[in-house]
Length: 201
Image 1 (cartoon, rainbow, N blue to C red):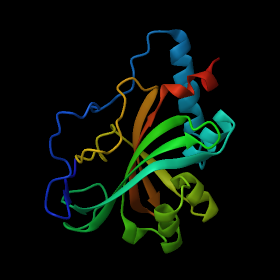
Image 2 (tube, rainbow, N blue to C red):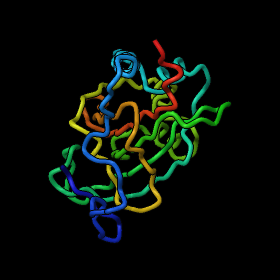
Image 3 (tube, one colour):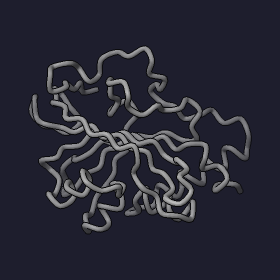
Protein backbone atom coordinates (compact mmCIF):
# COMPACT_ATOMS: atom_id res chain seq x y z
CA UNK A 1 0.00 0.00 0.00
CA UNK A 2 1.27 3.45 -0.87
CA UNK A 3 2.91 5.56 1.80
CA UNK A 4 2.29 9.27 2.19
CA UNK A 5 4.35 12.07 3.64
CA UNK A 6 3.10 15.15 5.48
CA UNK A 7 4.36 18.48 4.11
CA UNK A 8 6.99 18.52 6.86
CA UNK A 9 8.30 15.11 5.83
CA UNK A 10 6.65 12.93 8.49
CA UNK A 11 5.13 9.73 7.16
CA UNK A 12 1.32 9.84 7.09
CA UNK A 13 1.26 6.07 7.42
CA UNK A 14 3.42 5.99 10.53
CA UNK A 15 2.49 3.56 13.29
CA UNK A 16 -0.02 4.82 15.85
CA UNK A 17 -0.81 2.36 18.66
CA UNK A 18 -3.98 4.25 19.59
CA UNK A 19 -5.64 3.55 16.22
CA UNK A 20 -8.33 0.95 16.68
CA UNK A 21 -9.23 0.07 13.12
CA UNK A 22 -7.56 -2.73 11.22
CA UNK A 23 -7.53 -4.05 7.67
CA UNK A 24 -11.21 -4.92 7.67
CA UNK A 25 -13.63 -3.85 10.37
CA UNK A 26 -16.70 -5.54 9.01
CA UNK A 27 -18.32 -6.98 12.12
CA UNK A 28 -18.74 -10.73 12.24
CA UNK A 29 -22.52 -10.90 12.42
CA UNK A 30 -23.86 -13.88 14.34
CA UNK A 31 -27.58 -13.45 13.70
CA UNK A 32 -29.69 -13.81 10.57
CA UNK A 33 -31.25 -10.39 11.26
CA UNK A 34 -27.83 -8.69 11.35
CA UNK A 35 -26.77 -10.47 8.16
CA UNK A 36 -29.99 -9.42 6.44
CA UNK A 37 -29.45 -5.79 7.44
CA UNK A 38 -25.91 -5.78 6.09
CA UNK A 39 -27.04 -7.48 2.88
CA UNK A 40 -29.75 -4.82 2.43
CA UNK A 41 -27.18 -2.06 2.84
CA UNK A 42 -24.65 -3.68 0.51
CA UNK A 43 -27.33 -4.19 -2.14
CA UNK A 44 -28.39 -0.53 -2.04
CA UNK A 45 -24.80 0.68 -2.19
CA UNK A 46 -23.99 -1.51 -5.18
CA UNK A 47 -26.52 0.13 -7.48
CA UNK A 48 -24.66 1.53 -10.49
CA UNK A 49 -24.49 5.29 -10.74
CA UNK A 50 -25.91 5.99 -7.27
CA UNK A 51 -23.90 7.95 -4.76
CA UNK A 52 -23.53 6.98 -1.12
CA UNK A 53 -25.15 10.30 -0.23
CA UNK A 54 -28.34 9.56 -2.17
CA UNK A 55 -28.58 6.01 -0.82
CA UNK A 56 -28.10 7.23 2.73
CA UNK A 57 -30.63 10.06 2.45
CA UNK A 58 -33.24 7.72 1.01
CA UNK A 59 -32.58 5.24 3.78
CA UNK A 60 -32.75 7.61 6.77
CA UNK A 61 -35.37 9.98 5.37
CA UNK A 62 -33.46 13.24 5.90
CA UNK A 63 -30.67 15.21 4.22
CA UNK A 64 -27.17 14.35 5.37
CA UNK A 65 -24.21 16.70 5.60
CA UNK A 66 -20.45 16.23 5.87
CA UNK A 67 -19.57 17.33 9.40
CA UNK A 68 -16.29 17.35 11.38
CA UNK A 69 -14.46 17.93 8.12
CA UNK A 70 -10.68 17.96 8.19
CA UNK A 71 -8.32 18.42 5.21
CA UNK A 72 -4.59 17.72 5.37
CA UNK A 73 -2.19 18.16 2.44
CA UNK A 74 0.20 15.23 1.97
CA UNK A 75 2.75 14.21 -0.64
CA UNK A 76 2.50 10.99 -2.64
CA UNK A 77 5.15 8.33 -2.37
CA UNK A 78 5.62 5.65 -5.01
CA UNK A 79 4.09 3.32 -5.82
CA UNK A 80 0.63 4.72 -5.10
CA UNK A 81 -2.99 4.00 -5.96
CA UNK A 82 -3.23 6.93 -8.40
CA UNK A 83 -0.14 6.43 -10.55
CA UNK A 84 1.11 9.94 -9.77
CA UNK A 85 4.77 10.81 -9.34
CA UNK A 86 6.53 10.92 -5.98
CA UNK A 87 5.80 14.18 -4.17
CA UNK A 88 2.58 14.93 -6.08
CA UNK A 89 0.18 16.90 -3.82
CA UNK A 90 -2.68 14.85 -2.39
CA UNK A 91 -5.32 15.76 0.18
CA UNK A 92 -6.43 13.59 3.09
CA UNK A 93 -10.04 14.39 4.04
CA UNK A 94 -12.02 13.06 6.97
CA UNK A 95 -15.73 13.67 7.56
CA UNK A 96 -18.77 12.31 9.33
CA UNK A 97 -21.98 11.94 7.30
CA UNK A 98 -24.60 13.15 9.73
CA UNK A 99 -28.35 13.71 9.60
CA UNK A 100 -29.14 17.38 9.14
CA UNK A 101 -32.24 17.28 11.37
CA UNK A 102 -31.38 14.50 13.81
CA UNK A 103 -27.64 15.33 14.11
CA UNK A 104 -27.16 11.55 14.18
CA UNK A 105 -23.83 10.33 12.72
CA UNK A 106 -24.29 7.53 10.19
CA UNK A 107 -21.01 7.06 8.30
CA UNK A 108 -17.37 7.90 9.04
CA UNK A 109 -15.41 8.61 5.87
CA UNK A 110 -11.70 8.95 5.11
CA UNK A 111 -10.80 10.09 1.59
CA UNK A 112 -7.48 10.47 -0.18
CA UNK A 113 -7.80 12.58 -3.33
CA UNK A 114 -5.82 14.16 -6.16
CA UNK A 115 -6.87 17.84 -6.36
CA UNK A 116 -5.15 18.37 -9.73
CA UNK A 117 -7.45 15.77 -11.32
CA UNK A 118 -10.68 17.26 -10.00
CA UNK A 119 -12.75 20.01 -11.66
CA UNK A 120 -12.09 23.36 -9.98
CA UNK A 121 -15.78 23.90 -9.12
CA UNK A 122 -15.98 20.48 -7.48
CA UNK A 123 -12.92 21.07 -5.34
CA UNK A 124 -14.07 24.54 -4.25
CA UNK A 125 -17.37 23.09 -3.02
CA UNK A 126 -15.51 20.28 -1.29
CA UNK A 127 -13.37 22.77 0.62
CA UNK A 128 -16.03 25.32 1.50
CA UNK A 129 -19.39 23.55 1.89
CA UNK A 130 -20.92 20.85 4.09
CA UNK A 131 -22.05 18.94 1.01
CA UNK A 132 -20.85 15.32 0.95
CA UNK A 133 -18.79 14.18 -2.01
CA UNK A 134 -21.75 12.34 -3.55
CA UNK A 135 -23.96 15.43 -3.55
CA UNK A 136 -21.25 17.52 -5.19
CA UNK A 137 -20.71 14.88 -7.87
CA UNK A 138 -24.45 14.93 -8.63
CA UNK A 139 -24.76 18.72 -8.59
CA UNK A 140 -21.76 19.15 -10.88
CA UNK A 141 -23.04 16.43 -13.24
CA UNK A 142 -19.85 14.39 -12.92
CA UNK A 143 -19.96 10.77 -14.09
CA UNK A 144 -17.80 8.34 -12.16
CA UNK A 145 -16.99 4.67 -11.73
CA UNK A 146 -15.94 2.72 -8.63
CA UNK A 147 -13.56 -0.18 -8.19
CA UNK A 148 -13.51 -2.06 -4.92
CA UNK A 149 -10.27 -2.30 -2.90
CA UNK A 150 -9.35 -4.88 -0.24
CA UNK A 151 -9.94 -2.91 2.97
CA UNK A 152 -10.07 0.47 4.73
CA UNK A 153 -6.28 0.79 4.96
CA UNK A 154 -5.59 2.90 1.89
CA UNK A 155 -6.60 6.24 3.36
CA UNK A 156 -5.52 5.67 6.95
CA UNK A 157 -3.96 8.82 8.44
CA UNK A 158 -1.52 8.89 11.33
CA UNK A 159 -2.27 12.29 12.82
CA UNK A 160 -4.12 12.27 16.13
CA UNK A 161 -7.40 14.14 16.11
CA UNK A 162 -8.72 12.41 12.97
CA UNK A 163 -11.93 10.40 13.14
CA UNK A 164 -12.25 7.73 15.82
CA UNK A 165 -13.47 4.75 13.83
CA UNK A 166 -15.40 2.20 15.89
CA UNK A 167 -14.49 -1.46 15.87
CA UNK A 168 -18.15 -2.41 15.97
CA UNK A 169 -19.53 -0.95 12.75
CA UNK A 170 -22.18 -2.44 10.52
CA UNK A 171 -20.09 -2.45 7.35
CA UNK A 172 -16.68 -1.17 6.22
CA UNK A 173 -15.42 -0.85 2.66
CA UNK A 174 -12.77 0.89 0.55
CA UNK A 175 -12.95 1.75 -3.13
CA UNK A 176 -11.24 3.84 -5.79
CA UNK A 177 -13.32 6.43 -7.66
CA UNK A 178 -12.44 7.29 -11.25
CA UNK A 179 -13.50 10.19 -13.47
CA UNK A 180 -12.84 10.00 -17.22
CA UNK A 181 -10.64 6.96 -16.66
CA UNK A 182 -8.39 8.65 -14.09
CA UNK A 183 -8.24 7.62 -10.45
CA UNK A 184 -9.17 10.70 -8.43
CA UNK A 185 -10.05 9.40 -4.95
CA UNK A 186 -9.69 6.43 -2.65
CA UNK A 187 -12.52 6.37 -0.14
CA UNK A 188 -12.88 4.31 3.04
CA UNK A 189 -16.30 4.22 4.69
CA UNK A 190 -17.46 2.86 8.04
CA UNK A 191 -21.25 2.53 8.22
CA UNK A 192 -22.20 2.96 11.86
CA UNK A 193 -24.66 0.85 13.82
CA UNK A 194 -26.95 3.90 14.09
CA UNK A 195 -28.23 2.74 10.67
CA UNK A 196 -29.67 -0.48 12.05
CA UNK A 197 -33.20 0.89 12.76
CA UNK A 198 -33.49 1.84 9.10
CA UNK A 199 -32.42 -1.60 7.87
CA UNK A 200 -34.72 -3.82 9.88
CA UNK A 201 -36.23 -6.55 7.69
